[in-house]
Length: 336
Image (cartoon, rainbow, N blue to C red; front, side):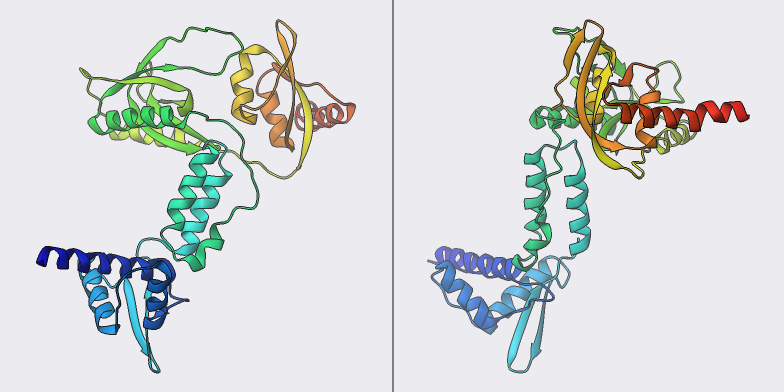
């Protein structure tokens, strides 16, 4: 009998607290009458009064050793509202905007993050998390495998062990063999709209190498290995990390056709996503149409490949690129 009574009391306690958390915040406090209406709407088979709710709230706040559910009296009404102690609403909004602007996460992952963030706040704030623009570019399709690899890497970093893995960059060659790489993992970082694994260099222990994390496959921990970084090495790694920056700059989004050689296909994927559709011109050349911001940063990116990526379409884009070269390289060198 007592066991059933305790169980009923617990269900009542959980239900009332849940209703307060999901239906109130600082700007939208809730009264006893409103809580009673919600209980009726939910079809719960119990009744409450101010004394019961006050007791539930006190127990909840005592458990968390903080006043998370606030209460105050105004006129004849007693008000309750939930105050998130860990995250401000605009902080949460900024996090979701960052997740959605990333091309790395799958659309399903983005929706999961948004749902979890929404659950931290009341129904009155759900509209803050609505995303009206779909900026998604497919870059990582198998999130389950990715998280499995990430878990192994994280364990290796924690245990200070080396890892062994295959680096499987996208290729236009079928059944390409991938050699095993064995290195000491330093950290995982998000930069340039991509997720990277940083590892200590094999030849130079004071430098670090970056790997696209979604290309890292079949990771395993090297058990008979020990990893230790000194202060000088950590400072060197930080300098490398600080150089992993990217600026979009000004410009407008345009459709542009590019020609590229097969050995830079993975770089095209990095830049434009997996949903590009290259057309084969010959064994050594492919072409593809992409949408991107056309500006000096984009031109500099093309130049960095030493002719392996070239502008292939209309005379306007070619002339703009030629003008950029003349202004920033040819004329400048002649002046110097």
